Image (cartoon, rainbow, N blue to C red):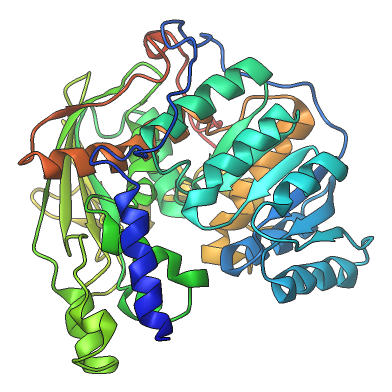
Length: 453
């Protein structure tokens, strides 16, 4: 048996289970009160003195979160679940090395998370598995009375997005997508600038995920090569939220503004086959397999206030890492890649960029001022620690989370809608309103950036 050929056969079969709009062909429609509006006030649960956490998935990113939670006051890691026993044991040993009681370990297969949720003393189920398991684990957790959080994306179908929204509303439990890029130092400083009106009316933003993943996809870096399976079966912006999350916060999405509709186009697919031919062999399964995912996918989104957003997904070509990040208003603009630059009318030299760093003393976000030292050495420049800290703080203080289920659903839905647009000659696709009208009155996000530090 050729394991790579068997893998790609499995990938093709997995793709056959998906319809063109990103819903599962065998999915049972989920009933729910989709006509009822979400509450105008953001949801807050009763405070927890100590947050007991159970992890489902402790591979690459999951292990990083375990290390973060061990550094945050008021947290007990009580359970670890992973399909690979060595990963679970590694996480267990890190908890013990921190002087904490050893967590219970669950390694009995893909559904053993259910036993963990049923048996272990946990308040928060934290999911860092491959994408297909994010929604099922969270749904099971909320129905068992637990708060839930997941690595991006929130789900892989629109039906799952709706079911997560409705389940969070019905069970009164937090359902959070952990978009770490919303906590990047630069993105948070831009948020502070926006709140203080530096750029005037916001008209256009750009972002994306541009990351050369060819070697990681085409080798065994990802468990069961799960990420490659999506490249085989799906064509759209498969990973929009790293760029879109911060932009959505700048533009008040779900809080006075909303995504209205989008159109998406994709380039030919060349990069994975060419890399495989060069590095694995021209006759290899990987080099002869057809990949649905376009090498470059561009999505243009229109908001209800009229602003435009350009998202780019590019993971199959040689390139330096970028999330693009650009924001344009009537009074100026700011960008992050390839260099951090800003131009503000009446403040910057005419027709010239300035270094963004020159604005940091005035516009550093207060969250970063407070947590810079505590986050030092954590993943992705510290933003991973800050996102975990903010989640724990909300649970312990009984306050709304920075990112809620409506945000996670709206940001994630761009993937499925982009697939549908590409499949229909870039036809415009309406973005669902997961708040059912409540976006018009929900208050804007405020993490303290409205007041000068």
